Image (cartoon, rainbow, N blue to C red; front, side, top):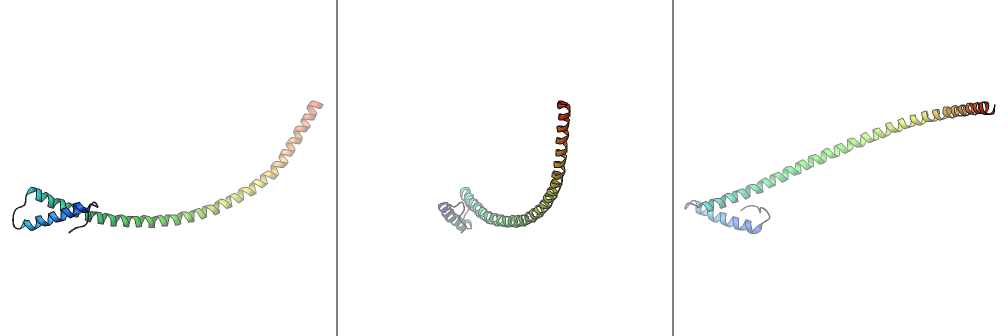
Length: 127
């Protein structure tokens, strides 16, 4: 009469059987509070089952949306990484050019400074 709820087949079988008995009695006589609670329990388990199905479908849709968004973001980050790599490579080349120019000038400056200090040392201490 309904879907298995809470993965309990014994409970579900008992509840189906009991609710069928009570429903067959409804038109013929009045039902007790206990029987009414059993029917309410059956209605709730049916409701739980339908909500479970709906929620699982909605979660699948949400998961699909996140996967689509994740793939879009991965593609965007990949293009950004490629752009940044090319930019960093060009900046790195510029720094290498500047570094070689500075190294060449610095070598001359160091040579001149060492020569000046050697001359001053010789002049001051040797006389």
